Length: 75
Image (cartoon, rainbow, N blue to C red; front, side):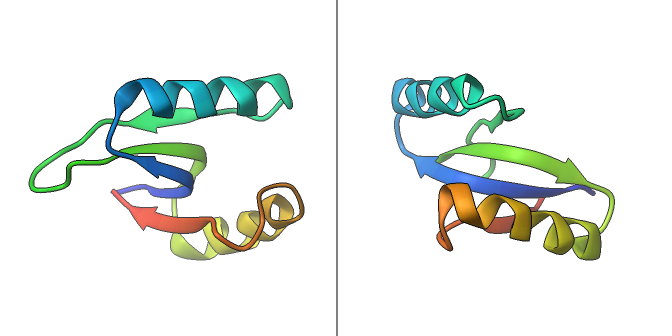
């Protein structure tokens, strides 16, 4: 299991790619988690970590740029 910091969730893959492109232009690493299981959303991620604690520590560095709407996803 990994812990991902999610910046955006979208029902449309193209919208997810558009948002991911904006993040890349800012110089941040980005990933996209495709829909899986019953989940129908594409998730744009800012990083992935080995533990919840590591992701929690990292999320504070992203809040200034992406706001408090980002969250951690165990995947």
